[in-house]
Length: 390
Image (cartoon, rainbow, N blue to C red; front, side):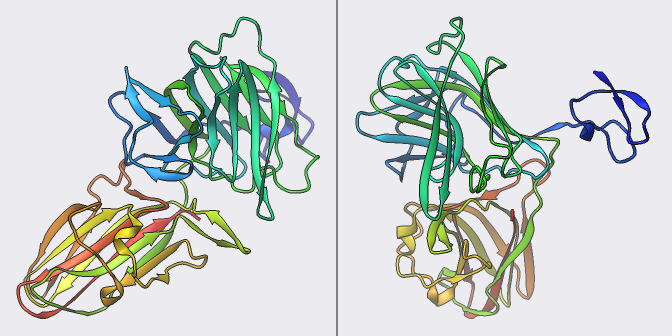
């Protein structure tokens, strides 16, 4: 707290270190943190929230498990084992971005590389440890080339990385702001970036929470969070996919397949699809009694041969209808999530009953399939509505 002179020249007692802590009328500004994504691992590593990869290939959970209420990250020699959140919390302009976690690093003295923070293989800001040394890392991609800045962090002798410590990364960002690294709430390193950059510091600020271990070692996490300092729920734009009217039969027929692509083309480079969406509503109608079913899958091989069309302006979402959908079966590597009955000459609207606090997020790699099965040969159709973070 200090005395500051307002724009009119009056002295005022304020909280903060810059003139921008007051609004245009000289009133004190305050902020409230908003958690955009957080995770705990008390009983499991929820597959709805996290993705495990081995050398960038998605796989069932094997190296990342719940152990004594913690996330256990078990590395293997010669393998890059990674866990990332499905969600990509987006930086919100003119607000701070804060990553927080607690970590136990019993094998920090080995040469195995431990990474944790906000990152994927194209963009990120995170901690790294190896051979009992802690580093601050910034990763970005420029003209399709990925590069890192890695700086050693000098820690007080009182900090033992093999024991439980809390780690935070706070970013001014706006594309060019400074980045601050904390251990046990003490500032230990700073990327001094303001006024030094020719391009933004990390090209995509929608970064998942990530844990990666390369080598035969283990690390543990108690919990992790990404917060917008003064932010709120992300704005979304409406997306829709409409089958129009389709001939139905007594067989179960695929009607709409919506796919959130893993990557898409950006200026000739395949970039990771970090645009998250929320399923809002599925509507179906039919002329006779009909069953409508909704399925989810992350297995692209189930739909090999399907003909898609882009469903948004940048090609991050694609859609297929009716006869363009090639599907091997509805029993393996696919989950039926909902079944509803449509009475003759009516429609049903299926919405998330827990939308206030339980948004159903759809992220890169997800497929949502709608099928219909009529009592007799007839006509019907379906529509998927979603909100996408842009």
